[in-house]
Image (cartoon, rainbow, N blue to C red; front, side, top):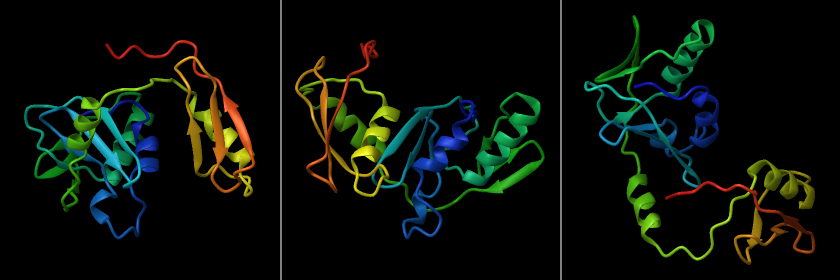
Length: 179
């Protein structure tokens, strides 16, 4: 399996943190057949396409192995392959595969693809983060409520901890085409 460049930094932000009782989501999960790496903390989930080899087997991929591969990539500028079989092998170095039953995130993803889409809007996540922090009583990004009119309308953003604080976020001008 080969990861996209710099994926280790983002995967750490999506996986459950060490010490979380749900130890089985502290590491990403490879779906070797679909060539997808899943990461979740139970609130958000990332579905990342990866390159796999014929010998790769579905299962958890330790963040430790991913970080090690990224360190090698930084030194050599090429992303090394992680052989994901009974263990996780990167060259001569081997890591144990974490155990535990990963949630069926693919099922949830597919169910959401089938639902009727009411409004599609593209936003800049960093701008939403900055606006959420500005609106919050704590000065840190937290929960917000989004009121969406239409795909070209501004999004009304309301802080969940400061309901009188409102903001607007303009949609991205050149959204992705999913067709």
